[in-house]
Length: 291
Ligand SMILES: Nc1nc2c(ncn2[C@@H]2O[C@H](COP(=O)(O)OP(=O)(O)O)[C@@H](O)[C@H]2O)c(=O)[nH]1
Ligand SMILES: [Mg+2]
Image (cartoon, rainbow, N blue to C red; front, top):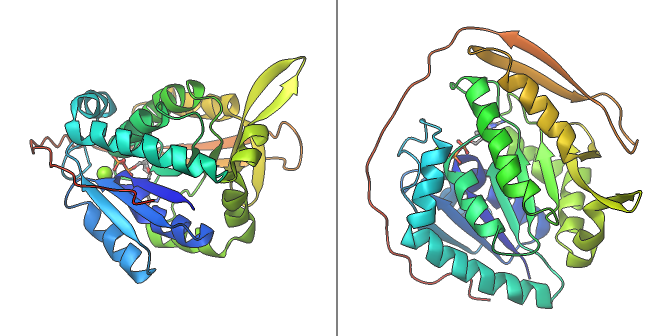
């Protein structure tokens, strides 16, 4: 029995593939009303059982990337708080069968990250399947990197028992990411393995001089274990690299070592950021997670 939560634009589109790969019993999609449609279609195409929850905590187009605002709205949204309560119940049921829930969302955005923040801080273990900011997105990469850094602090540093798979899917569109999730054996077997609570309890850590050290699984061309602080270093460098940074390449220089190094290449181009604002109201939710 497993549940995959798809949060925000990236999350709702990629969650159906994760759900299919691990044979999930249910996929729950959370995004703006319009944003939900493509994820719903993908769930239907994959023949998955699913629920969807419209929220209005980011902008309708998702373009403003205002994580602070989305976080404030999520904390006050009755829809999100009801979802959190249902999520906690569902997670307790999963734990009984030694499974943990999966949260799929993209680092750097607003909607997915703020819902992930609410949900993940309410349970001891959840597997995060997330992505680094995409250099081909129309927003300045620096803004996405700043958001991503804050989200790592909010979500991963505060919930340090949660295993994390961070994909570098730079310049890959959603369909390419989906194909990778479904066809990359190493990636989906890692997801499948980490959904096992007993694995999650051990695999998130190494012990060094008696101290627990947080690990993430970074997918580039291979799954490698890395410290979350390494990913933070990379994002910090991006966020400090200038206002107009729009291109970046992140690569793991060495794999199969305990502390892989990460190399980063930058390109600086000029780019305009758009400031989209929208006001829509929250929706009511019915019932989810019929476990
Ligand atoms: N590689 C890749 N990254 C994406 C794609 N869509 C969104 N992202 C990244 O995912 C992060 C979250 O974006 P998004 O899901 O649109 O934000 P949200 O809807 O507010 O949660 C950002 O850093 C984006 O760069 C995509 O199609 N490909
Ligand atoms: Mg969005």
